[in-house]
Length: 133
Image 1 (cartoon, one colour):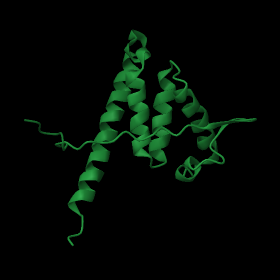
Image 2 (spheres, one colour):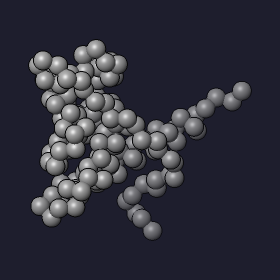
Image 3 (cartoon, helix red, strand yellow):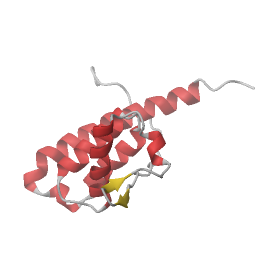
Image 4 (tube, helix red, strand yellow):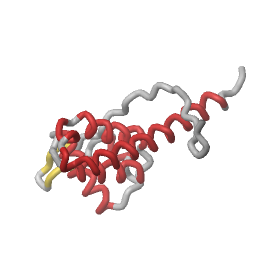
């Protein structure tokens, strides 16, 4: 019996693609890609940081901060699906099992659980409110 935890419904959540920035002379950018429109809610400095972080996720760097910060920025942009995919990308990475990253891995696992609960609630809300024909 859980007193303080909400019951999470068993809903299958399809993995969302992680936006991958393209190379430019100034580094990595979303300019000229459809991903920029979805991330336009971020300030320019955060968008620039996210471009660099998502490049790091795409090349599978070994630093958990890259995945943590990218997930947070994607969540702030309202992109919960890609943020969940970034968390899962770290948990699938071999470096996530290194002892020096145990605390970061636990943090990303908790973040993944919160994102999964949020996405499950939104999916369950959309199916429950579907208009009858």
